[in-house]
Length: 106
Image 1 (cartoon, helix red, strand yellow):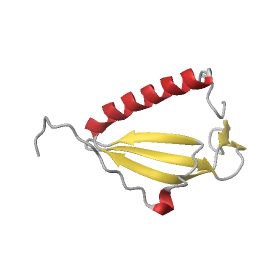
Image 2 (cartoon, one colour; image 1 turned 60 degrees about the vertical axis):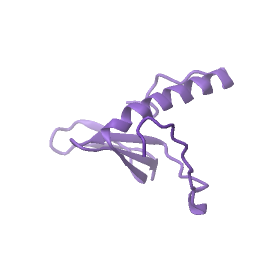
Image 3 (spheres, one colour; image 1 turned 30 degrees about the vertical axis):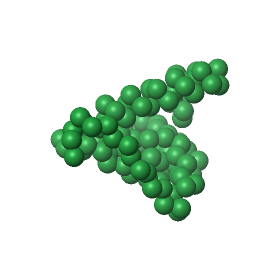
């Protein structure tokens, strides 16, 4: 395969994945060789809790990973570009801007 040749991907989507998985939010982390994106959905309503050691109040948000995606660091740049481009298209199509507020608040 020649590196300079244009690529045309033939993407096969298995029937069981057509519906996708809904996620309320994502958590991204990395190792030296891979970026990991965990997509999560709320498992139960958030609840207040007091730390027994410090007495500090905190909100516990029970969530479940619905999908984990691992990509090489080199692909993160392409993913960021694709997300930015699609967000711009979405904003143009809907006339909406995304909220700057955190979804669950503090």
